[in-house]
Length: 166
Image (cartoon, rainbow, N blue to C red; front, side, top):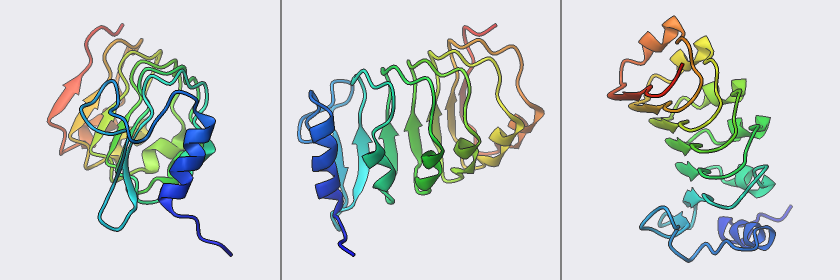
């Protein structure tokens, strides 16, 4: 079985995304769209502002990914493969069209920062309490009317934005 490097997988991803260049700076960040560690493993991936309606399958192959920015797209659903990203520490999904979050999200227990503002979320499940390392949780501009009691389990939480909800 042939092992494909992260750099090769990024090249495959680039072929699927017409306007995305991993070597250019992301429009929303002051760093390149794809950042590798010293072993050549992808650790940061910025796919913001790509008009994505679904997340490209190549993303789920990056087992060492620590930061994934999918903000400013047209995502309405997150696939089960999200659970493959077990080393993820930052996940940005703000300004999409999400109205429900999959159970797989709550298995990403290494998450420290989760950005879900500017979506259409109406509720959060009690499993959010599983994210014990979460320090930043951004939920502004959704349609939340209440929070689960388990949100109190987020003992590392330093920043919580709930502005402009119901």
